[in-house]
Image (cartoon, rainbow, N blue to C red; front, side, top):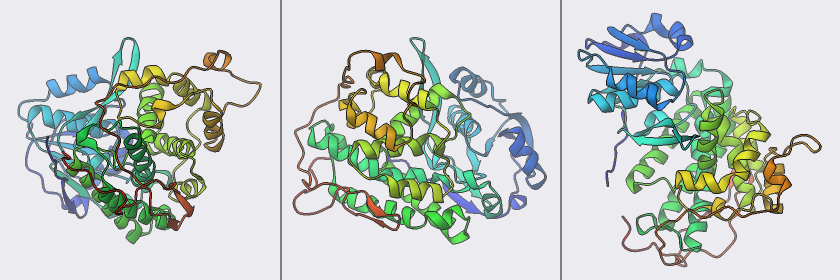
Length: 400
């Protein structure tokens, strides 16, 4: 077990960076056109990967010039993933320069890559360690488009559905010992989600203090996951579905645009009112209408195979019947239902079959709070007890 640290963060103007080491640059043409006159780097070689393809990223990593002593990833998405993989493979430091807070990935010690498994696309996360340094120019962040600037809020709000899934697995006795449910952790991270919802409007407006708050919330969320050596306190089915979809639909839809609708769907599956979550994400600039309903329905219909392929931690998806009333209601709430008298998936025309269960190391049923878990009544008042840390649910002993 490795407990990764957060990257070292530095703040300043891009033109204050003084770099003397031969550098490799990962970015996009659009990003570099906007920022190259503010960032003087001794670039020896440059790449602009537009996808997470494993063969492409492996080629870039295996063919980094020997003279390169530092890797710079400017922006997010595939260039950041490539930068992490290249730096880790070649044992050189990575400097990440986010141009928006559109996901928490610049803080993570892992990178997504897309691969094919038996002819099916799959997105997996490869442990790389964190960037050596993250350099933040607040002017760059503030100048980002509204639909990108603060949409990483989804990676904090997902604490809500993550905790619901974690407790669901605990009640079913499906958490491995090293991932046993810990109410004190739930109590800590719930406050992070509450603060994100409270600040969603100012985040969407690009208010400086709100963006600083979002950065702190992301850092605390990621560090908690690092400390636990798993992500159950911050992520659940919403990220699993987004991960599956990301491999299928390609790079045209952003991380937040994938996670957001999935979060609404999963909240509804857990019997929660997603309205305050929808409001918070929309206030923060998350576009919730980018996923095609047909793509999402095909993923839900094929959950059995996807769960087998990915081996995600146990969640409510493992017990979801894609043809059930609960699934249909959640699709409606998330605005992902296919319009009547148009497309029909093949599964929808056949008898219902429950999604298969992924085999996991089974632990004894854990003691968890019995009361129902409300998500929120309004965008400023998240009910705190997605998993309250009280005497009725003591932390389990022997956690890894």
